[in-house]
Length: 391
Length: 172
Image (cartoon, rainbow over all chains, first blue to last red; front, side, top):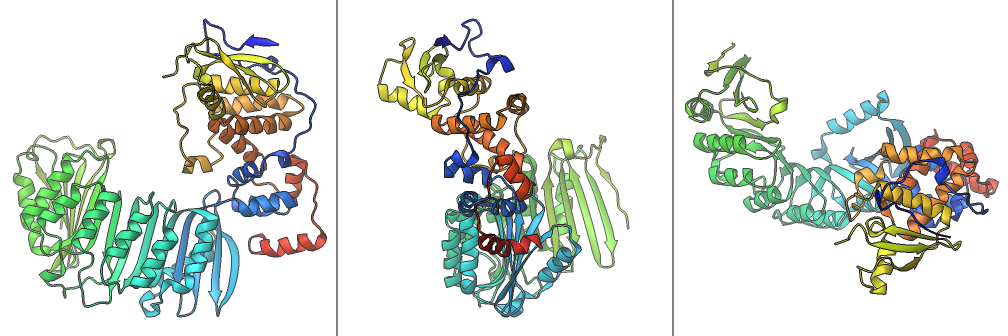
């Protein structure tokens, strides 16, 4: 038999028809005839409950399941007390959650649906635990984390309530190295001597796009993160959120490294979502204004920047915005709200750039600059600037 | 550069020969490697025959799929989030597989095409057929799975009890 499968006039088109399928030779195939690699490939597309059912089907598929990667959307680790912790595994392919609680050294494992009220309560308790009371090095948990990272493809990992010393950070880098993790949340107390390990952590995961660092430094060094770290992290990540667990008036200007020049450099980098949720007293009104203009001109689809700035700058920033030629005559709306002692200003520039300033105290205010895709923005049809003040 | 009119003749495990364009075979890592190894002039029409360990019936299905996907980007993307999902099979591919439902040996056809896609190193087809099989068993009980996959339980009662114990966290 020799035939040309393609008509020269229409070389690559075949019709979908039952008639095209010749009879198959007599040989009964089974899923067990497929190579083990194919079995695992199929199993990797199954959700948790199906995989567990499959394990009971036969010896071969039991073994295949054991070697198939699990798909984990989120791996969350919480320190719940001095000796106890909880690990929550969210299945990527179903709404099933695996919860492991270590109580007095004994693991208690159960599964729940993500909407189960018990689970919602449990997560609330985990999040509200004052982890600073339970500063514990990562060491004892390394095996548990490694087991999950080796057995699974984990998209996101959240580690809450651990003391990040130089040694535990080195350990964490080792665990996460070359893993396809997209997102990292680290809510921890840092006793590290520098940001080198933090930097290594971000660069050791090639697919990491987002890092959320909720940090508290328990060292004499009050700087939340160093300049070099910020520059390198924003050149590597799409989202960088740094939150200081301490936000009060005790910061002096020496505590911050973020000045106008650095802010512009950070906003000019790869990162399209930057939050520095700590006090940046070195920023001036001119620097913030330049940052707003930079974001407005940005080619990124969505850009967001949040930070805490000096409250005394708000008036100057708003004045600069209203007098800027590029913005005058376009759609500008300022809304000021007073809620107890908190006021909030919102400036909408060019219909898709929004600036919101919320005064938290006489010392510091939160500023949010956001540029959204034009299609999502609220259209404002006005020829002249409009100022609305609501008190 | 692959010229669409270049031809390659494939000889099947059951003695048939099929001639197809290089535009289709470029999606098969196995065939492309065989052609490279032969070091023949790419302009030869047709190229020397490449033997494939796939029967004629299955190869015809493979070529039908390749014809539809001839313009797919190469190389096939590395394992992504999407690849791990099983509910995103394109409509044409779904129709292509559903067509086999009219055959008594639908499951057999699926296994044969998975095996062929593996042997010929056609990543897109392999991924799609694995997803199809995964969809057939996702959400099923062990009894339903055994029926669909025609499996016999080869565990002892003790082994089953041990697995139930291992699975207890989810089954309770």
